[in-house]
Image: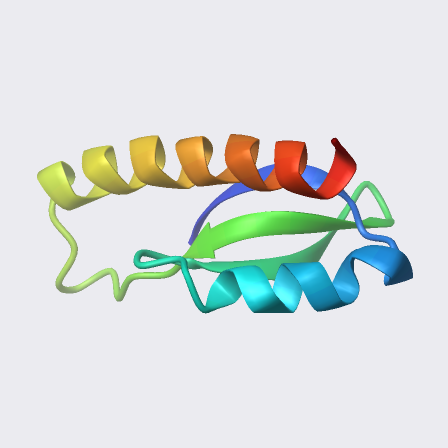
Length: 76
């Protein structure tokens, strides 16, 4: 799993966050506990047996860029 933290999860962001998933081509917006606090994260999961180094490199950059955009969109 490759993920990047966007922002703390808040109920007033839920609808916007779910709607964003329709536009994300690689990965998905999810909620994950970070130090016991729920946060929105951009997440992409690969089976270990089929993933290669180039795919990981590309995904890390894509997930980080999407996470920054989502944080800006949700929190202003």
